[in-house]
Amino acid sequence: MLIGFGHFFRLARAGSILAREGVFKSVDPAVLPVPAQFLLRFGNLLAKPGSSAGGAPQALVRAFAQIGPSYVKLGQFLATRPDVVGGEIADALTALQDRMEPFGRKAAVEIIEKAFGKPVDEIFLSFGEPVAAASIAQVHPARVAYAEGERKVAVKVLRPDVERHFRRDLADMYILARAAERFSAEARRLRVIQVVDTLARSVKLETDFRLEAAAASEFRDNVADDPDIRAPSVDWDRTTREVLTLEWIDGAPLSDIGRVAAMGHDLKDLGRKVLQSFLRTAMRDGFFHADMHQGNLFVDRKGRLVAIDFGIMGRLGFKERRFLAEILFGFITRDYKRVAEVHFEAGYVPPIHSVEEFSQALRAIGEPLHTANAQDISMARLLTLLFEVTALFDMRTRTELVLLQKTMVVAEGVARSLDPSLNIWRTSDPVVRSWIEDNLGPKAKLEDAGRAAIEVAKFTTRLPKILNDAEAAVEMLAFAGTKGIRLSEDSLEGLARARRRADRWFMLAVVLTALLAIHWMR
Image 1 (cartoon, rainbow, N blue to C red):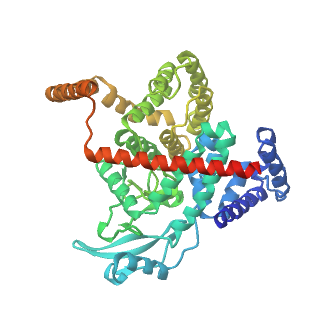
Image 2 (image 1 turned 135 degrees about the vertical axis):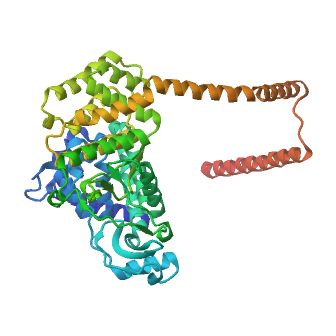
Image 3 (image 1 turned 180 degrees about the horizontal axis):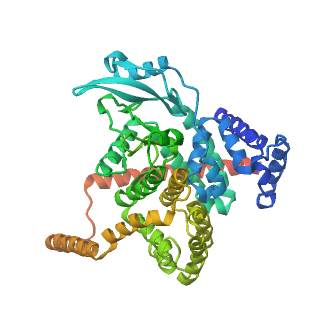
């Protein structure tokens, strides 16, 4: 009961803040059940004067910022799901800042000393005050003595009690998601419960810094030979579940364009590097940074991008990478029928629909892009239209593709902030074309044939054993069919005990039924 009241009061508080900020003003009551229509009208009475400024998207940003850290994190996550909240709201939520008051150096030192079981002075030569604080952790500068000399590092420390708070708020979100899927077919199509599942997994990964360290290390290895981007090294000896120690990055964040320009960097070239680096890691490695906003990208003195904060990462299998490459290449080359065929081949659009009709719908999306000026081509607009069209053709949500596509929109936004005239298609073309040639061209097909031949050879060597095993299984089944199945004495005794228990429960049920019948006949 107490747990139920806790959910009720927390959800009521969240609902009142959403209503006060005017989030529900744009909701059409006609699409809701009658009880929900009453609540909607009542909630709109609570809206503050002027709360409609900026519309529902800005109202949602204001409300999430007030409700608390878990909802800020929810907002940031929904910014990656335009299929759920719509492109306009998703774009607004990308501006939601995850900034909180720091919890102080003293508390951070206590967490570090508990995690390592020794004084902080034995771990770091110096440990400074926090320089950045968010809902999950805060960052401190420190210095470490290595064999090659003393170096500055960034130490990320988990916020106290953060897991308990997120666990509580996620439970509230599950209640709302289950209610939505129970009463709304659209919520079931969008898999709202799965959205909360993904958020819960993301929070779980973000609150175990060993996993973030592993992601940073893998990403660093993948881009080791890339000329345009790199990642900080991990100090594994000073990393635990609650503490993450990384190389300190000396550079300017892309959020400070003035500082980047003052360092003498070519902004247009940096815009190209942002977009191409994202596409290259996604398509070549199948492992991409899924939170590529300006604050998570620095540029060092050599002009190389440096990615930080690996709490949110995306993965793509070969099938998804092929899907992405052929989709982008199809839009670039205006081959809409091939784009449609890829959707059907991947099983994303049910075969009850027509490839030709789907191709026609895709043409309505792609053609305006080729008649627009370079600076007017927006990947965000393209994806919004693509989600609308695929919904008409019953394409179910693919979480990994949505995350990829939304990250592409963020990367585009960062690139455009550096070069407003950036041509998205022309910049993407060499990366996409190269991947297709390497993985879908004649050379790749020969390599696939070679791998297939090796697998066939391996299977052939195992074939005699497989046939012998199959023959033995058939003989055992034939013997059982003619002679019956023999059971050991222990097995027979076990069956007898189970039968006696069943008989006792049956007799008890009969007696209780008879007693109840006598009682009601009085």
